Amino acid sequence: MATGKRVPAAPASGAPVAEAVPPPSAAAGAPRLPVQGVRTGALPPLPPLGPHGVAPVLDAVTAEPPAPLPELAVLRALARDAARRAAALLQGHVPEAHDTVTDIVRFTVGTGGAHLETAAAHLGLTPLRMRHLTAAYHHGGPHGAAVCLSPRPADPAVLAGAEAAIRPLRPFADVPVERRHDRLTDPAAGVQLRHGPDGRWYPYADRHGTWQPVAGPHRDPARAYKAARLALRQHR
Image (cartoon, rainbow, N blue to C red; front, side, top):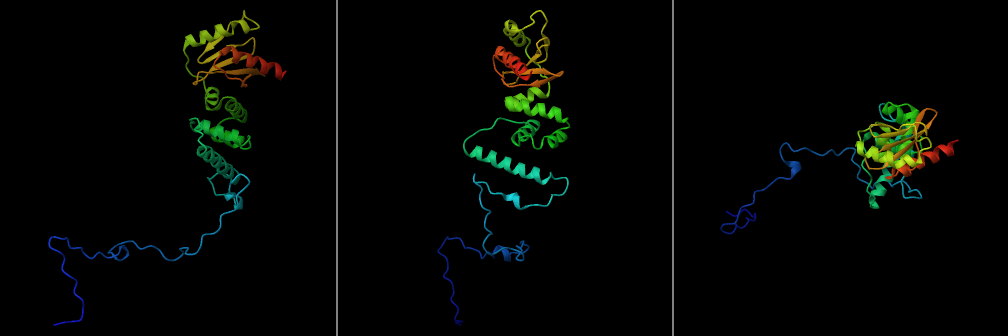
């Protein structure tokens, strides 16, 4: 007896029969997406870009974040730092490898020392020690900071070769040179050279009884020694 309904044609011989599959939202036990509070209109406009193409995303935030998050000024500095690093990567610049400590030092140098005391407290260092680290990074990057942080083992033959190279430059050649770890110290001249993991010699000058990093790291220990002597003369 005809019912008026159209009967679908039988599939061809050997063809698989497709089963009726309910939509995902109708399937038993399927999660349902919330419909309340979902934005359906146009997205809000992006904040205007600055002169260097940077959107001041955090500038509209004025309330301090809850502990233990950093202060708002630090968060803004971190966002700017991340934007600069991302822009450098997009331009093909491959940054040098940093560990956690040297990356904090890098960030402190990049902010002009504005957050030096906060970084020092985070690392458990005195502000003076942190200033030495930032100066070492400024002169030699992550390798310079690593040399400043702690002594490292060095090949005795490398130290002996460096001592021979600086011998003609020493003002008090009769005073023995001290060799310890990766450091070659001329106490009478107030000069110390530290051998870095990158093969360069990092100059240090004795100022008020403290070894301070100075500019002029070089693979030639004689050049680094001259840089330390020049820094001492300029500091007087």
